[in-house]
Length: 195
Image (cartoon, rainbow, N blue to C red; front, side, top):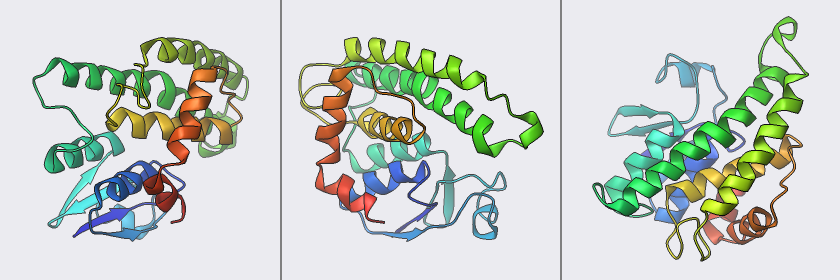
């Protein structure tokens, strides 16, 4: 049985949702970053942490890739053009969506107050809107980013769009708003939200 450490209000949500999509057995430990239970398995104190057979795996994207490869689901086969496109979408989302949202969070409540630059958030919102246009053009026809099959980037994009709304970063592309509505209807998404 897997153990997923981290609150559902963090990037751990991506892992919890994937567990629900896979129908995998897991234990959820809703620990907050830098708490004792977290630092015991990840000295950096960050969540999520997946513990598999006593071995901790850190960083949400690495965990998602590991689980997808291990279960042979929500991914394309390594060494294929589809996998290259999937990995490209993943990297784009991390660089353009996740990074902007994380930097905004750091300058809102994570960094010490004297280190925060509130004006940076306007620039990050502008970049986030520009990235949405690019993402909308990269989306395939179909219910998911790559078309008819759900993959790891779908988990990341949906989480980032939810995070954006919480952070008051508007979703300006109708195609992304429609996509988010569809993804929120998935039973596994709803199950993860309930945690």
